[in-house]
Length: 315
Image (cartoon, rainbow, N blue to C red):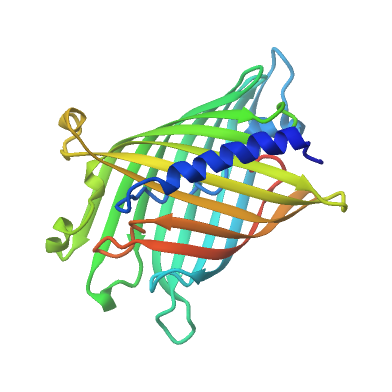
């Protein structure tokens, strides 16, 4: 699929706006590392699983994905990463889909003799309702997310986090539902929030995810066709702004907004598309709080990613 110049301009303009918005955030910015932040899953992108009008289908489709690669730059907590996940579409009608999804993001540091020491794992599971409209798609769902340390006894500290949320997302195609290019807008309202640290005295150091209230974000994606029919260049850019409350309680946190935090990232690479899709690319990400050390620490992360996932269902 060759992307037209007007489409590239629209996607490029949206991506530039996201980057400029992210770059203008204060240095104290942060946002949560959502395990699915690198892509979007939308069953309606795959025409092979469509359902006829006035019909419905149980267990209509399923898929999985995996990714791995080294970090080229970052900090002492990041050497390698590995991701694995999947979904099952429980029910589909002509314009509505209900699916469950789960995935993990595993992070290893370099602090052992083979340069691959298990350090942290982020877990996510959710249920998502997707609705197709004439010119856009929207999603609403609930995600339970948590982060846990691995092999942390040797360093004498621990940080376990929970940041489940209600998520809403609007997916806007660049031209039509048949193109790969999109701009997605989303919001999260955080329900369960926990930032437990050992030793306990470290809970008063730096930012605390117990104060999470909500977040808004944007993500853009585009492809540029290469001469080989099954090969494309792809690019993605994303940004997120989180709102933290001055209070940690579930209800009284709405009365006092304390801080605004943000993060951003971008990815470029080559994809090969057959019965599935494989991507090889570079991904850059900045976060003022990686969520791993017991005392919050920022990092500029650059990694190589080899990612495989179902054709069209994931972008």
